[in-house]
Amino acid sequence: MKANLDAVKSRIAAAAARAGRSAHDITLVAVSKTHPVGALREAIAAGASVLGENKVQEAEVKIADIGSEAEWHLIGHLQKNKARKAVQLFDVIHSVDSAELVERLERICAEEGRELNVLVQVDLAGEETKSGVPESGLDDVVRALQTSRHLRFTGLMILPPFFDEPEATRPYFRRLREIRDRFVAEGSFANGTGELSMGMSHDFEVAIEEGATIVRVGTAIFGTRG
Image (cartoon, rainbow, N blue to C red; front, side, top):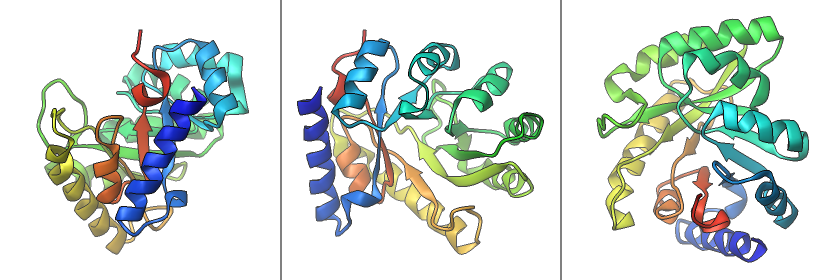
């Protein structure tokens, strides 16, 4: 595990250097979905500090065991009936995809007495099997976030189509960066700069070259999922 994690960090540093960036500006989310608590503890011991989970129900068991030893990010689609539990469990949600979900999360955060960092998942490819708001509907979601008092809109996330050749994902990453830059110019982000959550085990280096500030890496750290 430590060798895998160190290798990923080295690849992040090399990709950042090629883009004239610092590896310190890039957050590594170790995607721990489907892996047991023991593997997560091993990853934390090896230096992983941020863990990414796809499903609220699976994450609940792990978070109850591990707790604040790691920062927890929800990177999978959030069903509306899981919204309260997600608010209670996670530090960051990457997958906000509608104004309706924004309103529900805002209401729950108010009831739970907490603030929550969220990213909007953008669908640039129109794949039926994936979630995300199309670019044409993005402004409506952002407007809903800007009226929220408890949700902090901190960035955008994308899950592009899978290609055998990672270079083929570059146009999607580049377009998301362009969209992010527009919202930065409009002062839309709570953190000012706007995070870009993009890139996974097979394409995170291309994502970093195009401006990713968060990469979500599972297989290259934990091995093949069960």
